[in-house]
Length: 339
Image 1 (tube, helix red, strand yellow):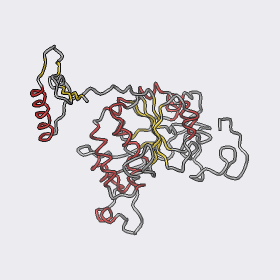
Image 2 (tube, rainbow, N blue to C red):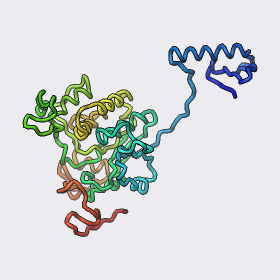
Image 3 (cartoon, rainbow, N blue to C red):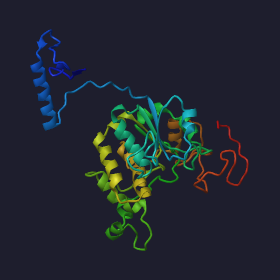
């Protein structure tokens, strides 16, 4: 068996029977010299952890990658079936043996998103789309609450130009100002006990300011935070790389170690992603501009915060059995999309 390692030490090689080894320049190294060089390398490795550099193959980043935060009982087959041209990374958060998972099921989708960026930082896609597992969900900005419809209409050139886009254009829930960190913050006693003075659980608004200070040290806490819910967005490679990988590692460490409940820690990031990726603390583009530029829907009747026929906040947060062809009252619905 022959062993080889890099450079001047790259040309070092020694056979198992200690024969002399030819070098790249035609000279011959005697076995004793090869053995000495190997011992020198071993000493460097044991004392300082140094090993010779080796060339690693270049991994071409995919143009588009969809990152899905999923539980093992959720159906994500729609991603494979209807978006075959996109690279896919489906994280199963509650199955440690899954092919793609997270260090710990904590912090909801934020753990998936941060883990993906940490693990894929050097080969991150030109456009990465972060979504939940359910195709149909109350927060999807579509008349049928169909996440597939929004993704199929997504204007990737606009994502690249903007750097970060929220997949919701409608303002309801989050805009124009969901959190006022300085006035909403809980007292020190409440923060220390994790409950309000009346005994109820603390809300995201009440813990956002101290969480922001921990996550973004040296950054002034904004007066207002506004962005449409609900942690589904698309980001360019450049926007992700505008921050070093160490930032994402630190944020994931915070998520792993924070005593906050999963819903609170996850919601902190829900109202932080847009800031992480370079947008102002209040990021609420007009609905007309958003639908036109993000989805190519440019002939809508709109107010500043919504466009007719695009989204209605449902009464319930769970979709009825049989949706999208059966409504909440059991009525039949017309649905033209693929199933």
